[in-house]
Image (cartoon, rainbow, N blue to C red):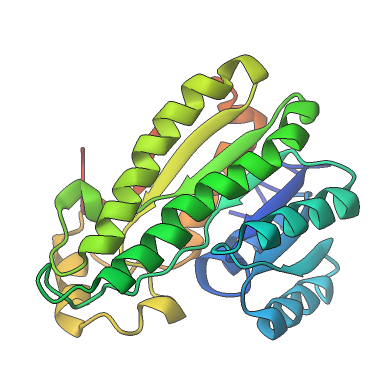
Length: 255
């Protein structure tokens, strides 16, 4: 796949949040291999530098930056550093999120957990987008990819705060697309299924089996399965597509 997509994003400048590991790392690697210059931002300060170094060792143009999406000042500093490092910004991948509500019923879920999930996943995505808008407008071909989830599309149980936050991401994507169309900025969401990454290690085996057995393509989902959709959404191939949510889950959900 990567050979066919080589140089698809030649010269683009892209910020990927939550890029130290898992899906974010896979996205950053694919975006850089497609010819873009990339900043990966993550709250895991040591890990993000290690991940950036790993990509640089592949002769990719990647820089690591620390960011805390719960801290508005940290977001502003991250974006300022990104724009200074890259000389502008053409794409933003809002990938970072937390999943702290997993395994809890709506009655077991605490207010603190709910607030933390909303603070990072919803408010953090809004503030990161807001901070990036001046640079994306200046680009003239800005593209925002918001990582949603297929969980709000099928109503995953015992995951209420996360599901609600990802449902909000889908709604925000539509509203932002209408706000930013005149600025030639596209805004789309990608809704992966259950992907085999470090962050989903807590998920019970029964849930993994449910996803695999109910997919049209009956196999585990890997980070690379989602990367192509991200590349497409950042590229000129999708310049007339905005406000959309693309489920990438092997046919588990077909809205």
